[in-house]
Length: 226
Image (cartoon, rainbow, N blue to C red; front, side, top):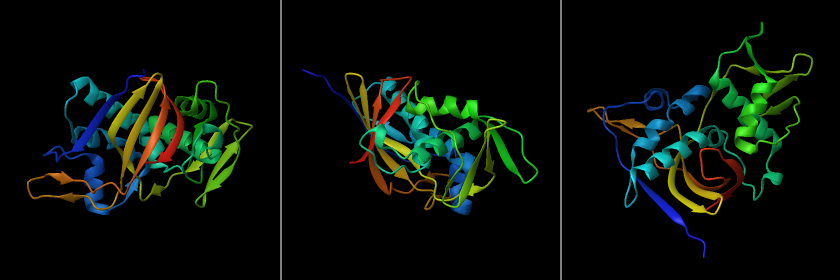
C-alpha cells in the first residue's frame, strides 16, 4: 500500500525582519518583476509546521522558492503538461532567467536574454528533455521578441503588478510524485504594525501542483484547482 507523508503548514506572524517584498507592498501595493522572487523566503519563514521534523519545514520552504516564478505568472490550470499554455511556459522561463543575471540592454531599453539560458530554466521546470519552440509572442500587451540570428530574447524592462507569491500549506508524497497545495498571496493588502511586524494578506486562491520527483529536482506535471 502506498505510504503518504503529509506536511500541513499554518501561517503565523513574523516580527521585525521585513523583506524587500513586504516593504514594497506596504509602500506601493505593486511589485517589480524581481521583487516577488526576493520575498519567498519571508513567506516560508512565517509558517509553522506541527507534528513534522525541521527537515519537513525546510522542504516546504524550498518548494516555495522553486514555485515562485511559476506562481508569479499565474498559470491557467492544466491536467497534464501536454495541455499547458506554451507561451506561459516560455514567459516563466524568460522571467526567471532575467532574475538570475544581468544582461545587455538594447538602445530602446530592452534586456537581451540568451536563449540557452532560457532553455536551461525551461528544463528546470518542465523536464530535462523539454524542447521549447522559441518564437516571438505577446502576453498582456508585452512583446517577447526572439532574435534567431543572435539567439536571444529581447524583453522590456517593466514593472508587473498583482504578482502572486506561493505559500505552501500541504505536501503529499506518493512514490515519485510530490503534490503541493499552494496558497496565492497577492501583492496588495500587506500591512505593517507599529512594532515592525509585517502582516501578509490572506491567499486569494489555492491551487494544487503535481510535481515529478521528491527533490531537489522536480518537473511540473499539472496545476489544478483544489
